[in-house]
Image (cartoon, rainbow, N blue to C red):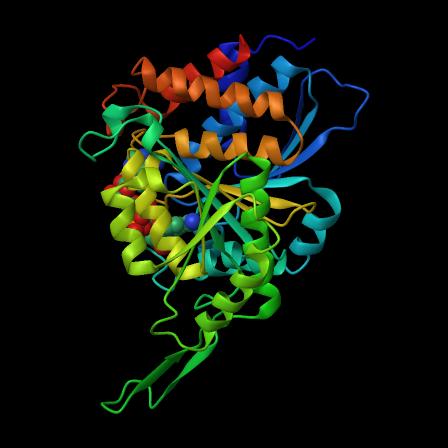
Length: 385
Ligand SMILES: NC(=O)c1ccc[n+]([C@@H]2O[C@H](COP(=O)([O-])OP(=O)(O)OC[C@H]3O[C@@H](n4cnc5c(N)ncnc54)[C@H](O)[C@@H]3O)[C@@H](O)[C@H]2O)c1
C-alpha cells in the first residue's frame, strides 16, 4: 500500500530539487524488492522547470504503487560550467553504471555558452560513453485537435521512431584545414559500423515484435550515400529475413518525411541513422502537437539508460513557468517501463491522456495552466490512481 502524496509534499520536493545539489530523497513504501536508484539532471533553461514536475509525477506514481525510489540530483549544466568549469566529471560514467538504474535529464543549452560545451560533454558524453545506442522516440497523437494535419485522428499517428544514437554524423570525427581562411576546408565523417547498424535495426524489429506492431520501415539515403548507407541496405536485408511476421519496407529519407505528412498512418516503427532520426522525430513531434509533448529514451537494453524530453532548453520561454512538462513526464513514464514498473508507466500515460482530454494543459496545447500547475494536476491524478 502506498502513502498519500499531499500538495505540501509535492511543493516541498519541488523546492528541494531546485537546490541544485546532490540531494538524495526516498519515497514510497519499501517492498521486498530493493529501491530503484534514479539520477536526475535538470540541466539548463526549461529543463530546470519541467524536470521537477516529472519527478513530482514520478514520485506520485511510486507512492501510489508502493515502490521505493531513491533520487539523486546533479546540478550539471551551464550555471555549474560557468562557475567552476564542471561538465561531466571523469568518474560519472563508472558511477552511473555502478549505482543507478536510470537517468532522467531535462535539456542542455544556454545562450551564455556559445560553444554548448556543457551540452556536448554531458548529453553526448552520456549517450556515447554509456553506449546508449537506441534513441527511441514515440510520436503518438493523444487528441485529434492537436495535430496540424487536416482530417487526421488518433488512429492515424502512432509512430515509434528508432534512431541510431552513437554513430553517423554525430561521432564527432572530422576537422578543419586552413580554418578561418578563404581556402578553409571542413570535414565531418559519417561513421557506420556493421555492429552499430545491425544492433539498431535488430532493436527496432524487437521493439515492433514486443509492442505487437505489424510494420517497420528502414530509411536511409543509399541512392546518394553509396558506401555508408549501402551497409544499411545489406544489413537490413539480412536482419529482416529473421522477422518474417513483420512487414518491412524501405524508403529514402526525403520520401519518408513527405509520406509522414501525407499519410502518417502507413508507419508504425521507423528505424534510421542518427541525423535522419533526429529530424524525422522532430517532424513526428510536430504531427502530435509540438515539441512540448514528445519524450525519448536513450537505451542500451539491460543497462542504465537515459530518458529525456525531445525538446531543448527553450531560452525564449525559460523562467516564465510556461513550459509544457508533458514531454518530461512521458520520458519518466518510458523510464518506468525500462526499470520494470509497467503499472506506474501506464498510470502516468493515462493521466497525460486525461489532462489533454480535459484541457488541463499549458498554453502551447491550448490550456491555461502553468508548468507547475500542469505538473500538480498530473501528480494529483496519478496519486489517486
Ligand atoms: N536534448 C537537448 O538537451 C537539446 C535538444 C535540442 C536543443 N537543445 C538546445 O536547446 C537550446 C534551444 O534550442 P532550440 O530553440 O532549437 O530548440 P527548443 O526545443 O529548445 O525550442 C524550440 C521551440 O519550441 C518551444 N518549446 C520547446 N520545448 C517546449 C515546451 N516544453 N513547452 C513549450 N514550448 C516548448 C520553444 O519555446 C521554442 O520556441 C539550444 O541551446 C540547443 O542546442 C538541447
